[in-house]
Image (cartoon, rainbow, N blue to C red):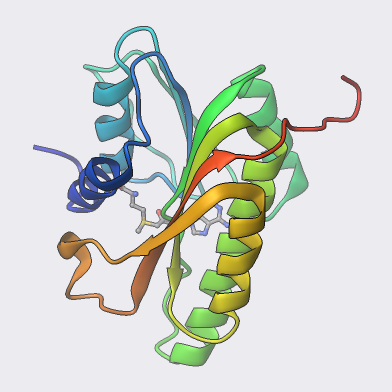
Length: 189
Ligand code: SAM
């Protein structure tokens, strides 16, 4: 079994659009407790690398020594810098399942979700090689169409889907950006 039910969502997203491949370097944002990390580690195999980031500590994986974890806040630039350092070069896939702590007020939670999704998108633009793929969760609502269009501009295409494994949380959608259009530009390169 996996550490989270969310693991099955990533499997469905990967079945749909084939984002994870052997040997890939994958960066997973909002990775605790680590179900997506397990699925990604299985998919990339021993030649691959998986880097997980979360506000929460992620327990060590006894059976996957390809997984590296970072505890930090992705809205802070110093955390993004640590991720860039850990990746140390080319990144094939950025996936984000980040979600805010729920206040219970939908418009507030939705705005926070979109903010986290935009942070993940910025990170993907900073990290991803050309042709790399991006998966991001966002709660349906205000300004999501504009976000989808922005992702679409940076990738060959973008697909929106709600995996069956998240049917009970019907406000969640995932965007899959396939094929980053340009190589990353990093200062200092
Ligand atoms: N995909 C994970 C799995 O399979 O185990 C589940 C992720 S859970 C739905 C969302 C996570 O996003 C939480 O663990 C939360 O701590 C994290 N998160 C929320 N805001 C964050 C931030 N600013 N930086 C890093 N992680 C964040």
